[in-house]
Amino acid sequence: MPADFSAVIAATAQWLLRAYPPAGGVFDAALAEAQARQAATVAAWLRYPTTLDSSLLGMLGPGGSARLDWVTGVDTGMDTGMDTAATEEETAWRTWVDEVVASWAATLLADGELAAAAVAAVAGSEHADGLAFDFRRLTHPDDRDRQAAALLRHPDLLAPVAELHRDQLDARLGRHSAEAA
Image (tube, rainbow, N blue to C red; front, side):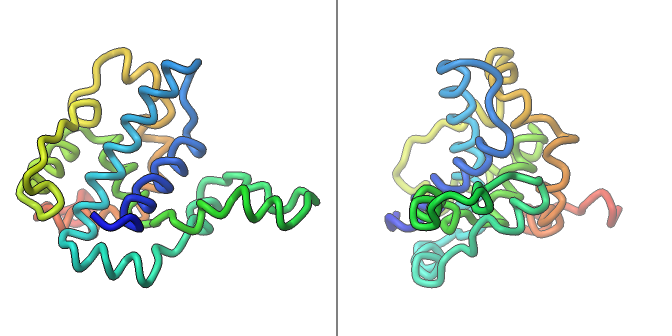
């Protein structure tokens, strides 16, 4: 997997965690991060199903988090009057956020049935070829996982982001959206 592809997954997971922070301390943060990374990974594998797709992503770039920040009201710290160079350096990772991947990941976090279908869909992908992977925290979160990521899994809170590209995810998985039904 190209390094740029993993940067997109990491940045998108980071964005999700900042927009929907974990409930408690370090253990909750680790559990929430595992869930966000699993969701971003599955979403990215679905969005960019081949190595060629992920390589093109690395060349063209993912687009950044600006629209997501606006939709959720996330404060990026860019208008704080701080030193511009320091602020840009601290938020440069936001340029690697992929809006569609974030939207799909939010949808998967909010809908366990859809998450299971998505994991099944990527099981035979080029990205999963030869890998033993476990997306259990995404598809079958236990009570501790849910508690740690209460905001990250709350369907009402995720809705503005999830709905941005839900129809595309449904189409990719061969499902019909609720609006079309």
